[in-house]
Length: 405
Ligand SMILES: NC(=O)C1=CN([C@@H]2O[C@H](COP(=O)(O)OP(=O)(O)OC[C@H]3O[C@@H](n4cnc5c(N)ncnc54)[C@H](O)[C@@H]3O)[C@@H](O)[C@H]2O)C=CC1
Ligand SMILES: CC(C)CC(=O)C(=O)O
Image 1 (tube, rainbow, N blue to C red):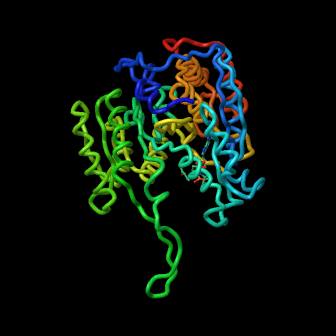
Image 2 (cartoon, rainbow, N blue to C red; image 1 turned 45 degrees about the vertical axis):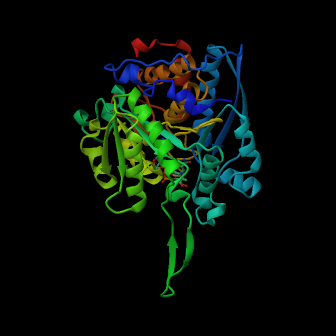
Image 3 (spheres, rainbow, N blue to C red; image 1 turned 90 degrees about the horizontal axis):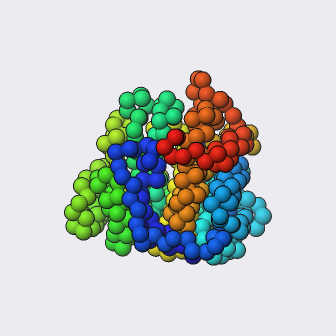
């Protein structure tokens, strides 16, 4: 089974740099485990989930298959239930079998979960609880969310060209701690007998230290700049976050560390996103800031993610949700999931060549003018999720070299 963070630490933390950032030089690590099986064969757990999840996973699976077969890779796919689909079939959002199969696989590719149908469910019967449980079950505490503005999509950004052009940042989000998991949590009544709901933002030292190490290492391989985002002017958990990040910084004298309050960071991302390179932040701030960062790139449908732990399979998923407003209409943008599949190959399996094929194919498809509605602009070709998938496959097949895209 792949040891995800070990692979990451040996690799380039800027997967798209070859076309988005000519100023930097690719880093390679000789310690990265070369694939030794021949033919290389991997077990991949697919979790399509709900809403547009199955639509985008179907495209990504085909792309993985083709890029893999062209690079001598074979897969055993295990499609399992998660979220609302699992609730309907089994009564729980994360069946034991799903977690067990996921744990035994080499990597996990997830679509999205959730939908109106389950919104009124109690907490333990919500699709979202299944998502949190699988992240925790796989111990994937480091969630990497690269936000890269592709030259082809500068005009799809809601920001002015001069602000959006060249943005290439990495949000390192802590994924298995903080307020999404903190206890006590729940509903009750206060001393006046009034109903209340409450949650706890809590971080132990080891949780901050390990995500800080990941972020510093990524920053080292990028531009050497790390911004830690918190709310240390108000929240004790953030004051402690900052203290630990400062302590860990002693081990990375080559990284220029800055701190920013989250309210300012959300404003600065829109004012001047190019001031950021690597951002490290807690679970909830990372969730929100990465959705915001996605719009700089043109759409939430463009942002992939990799969630990695110290050992075991990584979990790869687009940052978007199940988009119930467009589900079943063939309108979903599958690029985020396809790029998550590329991250799976690169950081989950060490299959750089197959990953590169997919990344180049995404750019080639954009170069050939194909767009889903969320990134459409005048003069480009509007297509649905399925047709975009077919175009990506053509680009994978033609294997346009990186220099040409
Ligand atoms: N990782 C996951 O599975 C996540 C699940 N959710 C769940 O998803 C459901 C909907 O949540 P929302 O807040 O509406 O967030 P969302 O990300 O599903 O949708 C927000 C907006 O972006 C659009 N959008 C999202 N992905 C797109 C894509 N690939 N292509 C084109 N447009 C896209 C949607 O149509 C919608 O207008 C909820 O049940 C929520 O809990 C939300 C976020 C993450
Ligand atoms: C639906 C939540 C559990 C998670 C979320 O919003 C996210 O990770 O993007």
